[in-house]
Amino acid sequence: MILAFSWNPIVWIAELFGFVMDLIFKGVSAIGLPNIGLCIIIFTIVTKLILYPLTLKQSKSQKLQQVVQPEIAAIQAKYKGRENDQQAMMMQQAEIKAVYEKYGTSMTAGCLPLLIQFPIIFGLYKVIINIPDYVASVRVYFENIVNAIGGEAALSKINEFIVENDLVKVLSMARISGNEVTTTREAVNFLNKLSSVQWDLFINKFQSASAAITENLVTIQRMNNFLGIDLAATPSSYGLANPKAWIIPLLAGLSQFAASKLMQKQTDAASQGNQNDQSKMMMNSMNYMMPIMSVVFCFSFASGIGVYWIAQAVVSAVQQLYINKQMDKLDVNELIKVNLEKTNKKRAKKGLPPVNEKAAEENYRKMQKRMSKLEAKRNAAVEKSNELVRKSNEYYKTDTIADRARMVQQYNEKKGKKE
Image (cartoon, rainbow, N blue to C red; front, side, top):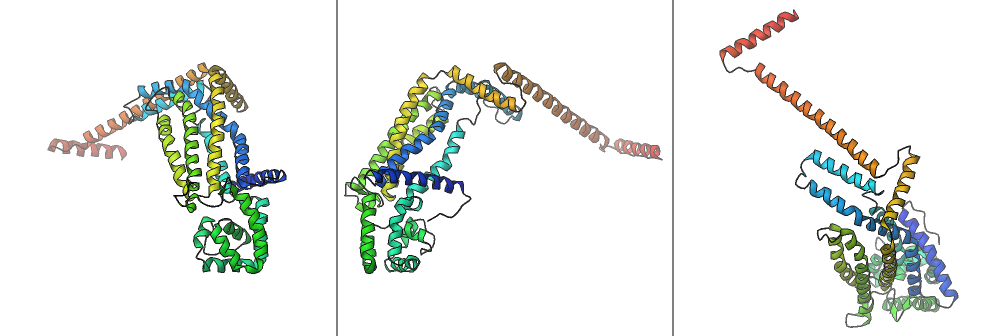
């Protein structure tokens, strides 16, 4: 089945990762281990390696903040209490910009890698949430079941099954709008969300195709079985008294906490012990909130999502350990030199002069001079306006009879001049 073309870049990314997952599934099947849990772990490692350059770039940006942040903090302290002074705020921005230019970076340098990762992460989740929708080698077993109960005619039969067993909620879990399936693709997504009890009902409904359904279902269940846990089922379906219900949520929370603590090391270094630093405060909060949220969400999501979160957190922790060691060895002066070289190459292409510490200071002085001229022009305009108001008030002053007589005389004189 070929997915319909979409202009949504997240869908393109999902289809690309679906192709990668399909290759992984074929690979593990070739060695006799056709298991979706194993595929998710390998897939997570592959995607983290793909995103490694962005993660490294972000870490270098945080390393550079150790040098930049104290200077920025000093500038902000200099203008503290003058937030309502427009000129002061413009001068503050000019000084901050000069500091970033001096080190060959910018205010958005640390945010860019994160922004690039967002559509990639969303694409990853689309694949993990609905694996048969994007992985052809897995989807084929569900399509075999649809074909066994009637092909295109199977859609109406499946809709009858949904109504008879009140399974509209399963359609919602499969992200299908409406109260029925309308395509084979939607039928596959619906079947992928059925629990073992619901599969029994399905087999009873289609007795004539029970052999074909059972044959493919055995393969599907074997693929979804990971350490005795059904990856297609939610942990809550086991009941809170069952230890199986707690394994994945608790592992997801603990692994998330460990990864967050490792990432905090760089944030603490960048904040230079400043307890009011927003990034540090946010990280401290997330260190506890994210693991708790992972535990809660894992109970209501398919276990496959929990396996992905655990694998992602473990791989991130290992990757962060390596990056932290690299950052400890990294020479900040060398990093600044490389950044300036890259910046100046871009400026040279645009016909702009190179940037260095002296150039940044010169740009700041020019900005100050420009701002002073603008302020002088603004003050002159205000003074001229005030003078016009003063003269107008003098001209139209009518407090006494003499004032009125003077106004009439001035009017007659002007009229006489015009004539």
